[in-house]
Amino acid sequence: MPDVVVIGAGVVGAACAHYAARAGLDVVVLDRGPVAGGTTGAGEGNVLVSDKEPGPELDLAVLSAGLWRELAGLGGFEYEPKGGLVVAEDDEVLAALTALAAGQGVEHTVVGAGRLTDYEPHLAPGFAGGVFYPQDAQVQPMLAAATLLREGARAAGRGTPILRTGVTVTGFLRDGERVTGVRTDRGDIPAGAVVNAAGTWGGEVAALAGVHLPILPRRGFILVTEPLDEPLVLHKVYTAAYVTNVASDSAGLETSAVVEGTPSGPVLIGASRERVGFDRTVSIPVLERLARQAVELFPALAARRVIRAYCGFRPYCPDHLPVIGEDPRAPGLYHACGHEGAGIGLAPATGHLIAQALTGARPGLDLDPFRPDRFDPDRSGTGTPAKEG
Ligand SMILES: Cc1cc2nc3c(=O)[nH]c(=O)nc-3n(C[C@H](O)[C@H](O)[C@H](O)COP(=O)(O)OP(=O)(O)OC[C@H]3O[C@@H](n4cnc5c(N)ncnc54)[C@H](O)[C@@H]3O)c2cc1C
Image (cartoon, rainbow, N blue to C red; front, side, top):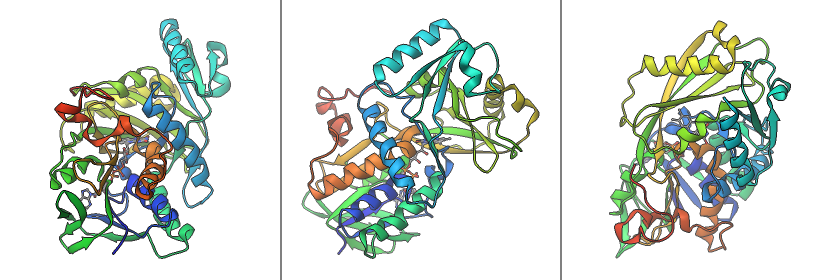
C-alpha cells in the first residue's frame, strides 16, 4: 500500500509527489490524461513575485521562487531567471507601483522613464517609468512537471513516485470520516493519505469526498509568435493594469498583455481572463486585444506573425488563494489545488508544504490562510474572508 496517492499529474501534483518522495514516502500519482495535460500544458510559465499583493500569496511566491531556483539545478527543463519589468502608463500609476513594491518588501529597483530602454531596448516610448523585479523568472511548465516526477524518484533513491496515466479517480475509500484511498475506473487503491492536486477539477474531486471547494474555471488565451531571429523582449514585461486584473473578482473579460521571449525564439503574449465555464471556442476579439496590447508595449511586434493561439482554464478560487492542507472535514485527504493564474510559480512551495504536512513536520509557512474549510459559512468569520466572485 502506498503512503500517498496524488490525484493529478500537473505541475502542482508533480511537485507534491516530488517533495513527498524526497521525504521518504512511497507515492503513486494518478491522472486520467497525460502528464501536464490539464491547465499546466496551457500556462505561460511565469514565476512571479512582482504581481502579488503583500500577504500569504506573496509569502508563498517568495518561498516558491527560491525553490524553483534550486529545482533548476536538476536540469531537464528551461528555467530563466530573467527578472520582470512592470511599466507604468503615467506618474499616478508609477506612484502606485512604487508604493506596492515598497510594501511587498521583495528585491526591486524603481526605474525612471529615461532608464527603461536600458532594460528593454525595444520598449515603446512614453511610459512614465517602471519597477524591475530580479526574482521573477520563467519555466517551461510541461517539462518541469515531467522532470519533478522523474527526479523525485531518483532523489529518493527508490522506485517512487510511480506514475499511472489514463486512470480516473471516481470516489474515495473511507473508514468512517477518514479517507483511506481512492476508487478509480481501474480498481481501488488503498493509501495512507490522498492529495487532491486536480487543479481546476479540484472542486469536483473534493465533492467525491463530500466536501465543498468553490473552484471555478477562469479562461485564458495565449498568443505565440513566429520564432524571432534575435531577442526582442529580454525580460517579462507587463503593464501595471495586469496586477489589477489578476486581483479582480470580475467574471467579465479582462486583458493586459504579459510579453516574454523564449529561448527557442517565439514570443509568448498572455493572457486574457474571463469566467465562461469550460468553453474552448476561439475568441478573435480577445486575441485581437492581446495582440494590440503587446504592440503597445513593443511596436516592433506589429511586423511579426502570430503562428498559433491556445487557451486553458485557471483554477479560480473566490479569494484568489490556493487550497493547501489536510481537510478537517475528511481527514486523510489533503488538497493542493485552486492556484488560479499562479500555479506554475507556486507549485514547489505547495509541494514542499504538503510533504511537510504528510510527514508531520512543522510547516515552513502558516497554512491557515489556505485552509480547505475557509469557504464554509460557519468558518468565514475566521482567517481569510471568503469573497463572492
Ligand atoms: C492562459 C494561462 C496562462 C497561465 N500562465 C501562468 C503563468 O505564467 N504562471 C503561473 O504560475 N501560472 C499560470 N497559469 C496557471 C497555471 O497554468 C495553473 O495554475 C497550473 O497549471 C495548475 O496546475 P495543477 O497541477 O494544479 O492543475 P492541472 O495542470 O490542471 O493538473 C490537474 C490534473 O488533474 C487531473 N485530474 C482531474 N480530475 C481527475 C480525476 N478525477 N482523476 C484523475 N485525474 C484527474 C487532470 O487530468 C489534470 O492533468 C496560466 C493558466 C492559463 C490558463
